[in-house]
Image 1 (tube, rainbow, N blue to C red):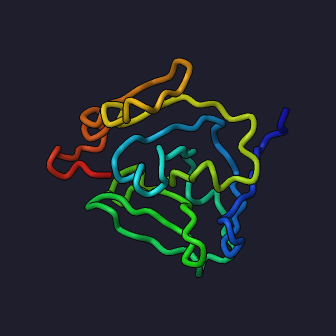
Image 2 (image 1 turned 30 degrees about the vertical axis):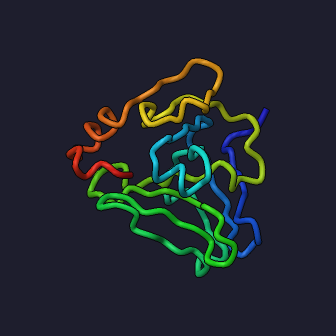
Length: 152
């Protein structure tokens, strides 16, 4: 059992970017949108956390790409490892990052609690267990985004 606060470390594949993050939740989710699948090679598995809870080393190697009108993705500029997804709207979600689970040195003890863009999930993907599953329309409605703007 981990003691509170739960501080996790991680980084990119080559080590140019490292971080220390204080988790506010032990729950993570998956996004099945086309952009996340292309970016990660699968579904994005990510843990939501306040940006203020992350301390970066090698931040000069983080490259951000505005991937839609309302979100950006960040990678290491040296090895290309996916680091995080960030909503850039003027919205309470903009204070958080969706930190890629694969970037954590230790992802043990976390629980899988949600899947989004479930209606975009390839039929060959199948995660066992029960959890919240939201469609693209449900996610866009939560963000107040029209369907025409809907790429994540």
